[in-house]
Length: 235
Image 1 (cartoon, rainbow, N blue to C red):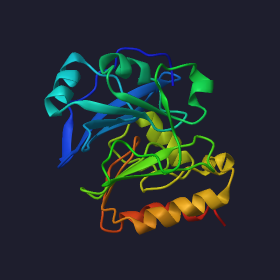
Image 2 (cartoon, rainbow, N blue to C red):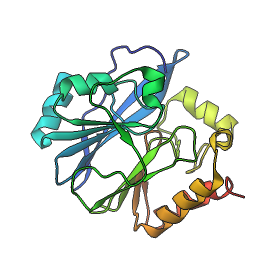
Image 3 (cartoon, rainbow, N blue to C red):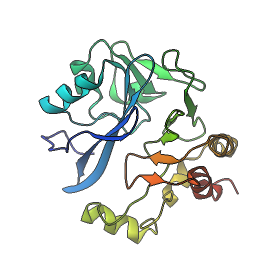
Image 4 (cartoon, rainbow, N blue to C red):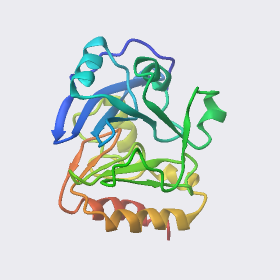
């Protein structure tokens, strides 16, 4: 991602009870790429997953929804707006992927996302940390709405995405359907961790997947869609 610039994002959209999204983008090599922040309502407050650029209007809208209790940089790639978000919501807990602080430097009060991590006392919010993948992503399952939230462990690039990203993902065979880009194979350090992720996802009653890049998936077979996309990486 390129150095930060003023980003015009859309309004926060309600997806389900206790689930909202904010569509945004990043710029790399002069091209736009889609980006999305997910907001989850928990018993402790609001959880912001993968922060994006926030305008004064966005901040007011978020505060109208509730108190921000947790800010999550879910992997080693999704951190560009982390510090900005912390400055806006300084009382929130900050969570970062293992290894991220070595990459970006100290973040005051940051807590490390580890296997089995929980946000507050909400038992309806489940997590899985993919320790066998280099980006160390933590996925979150919002059980109340059947929503799985991921940053980069699944893509679903479709016609509404930006031209450059559509072209790139078409060229690598990753356009037009939920999938995982081939280059993730080079980031897998431990196939048993990926197998554990697949089995865990298949065991959750997921009916929606929200990722940071691409169209949301709404399907009773959402768990199977995610699992099928990853099966090729554990063979």
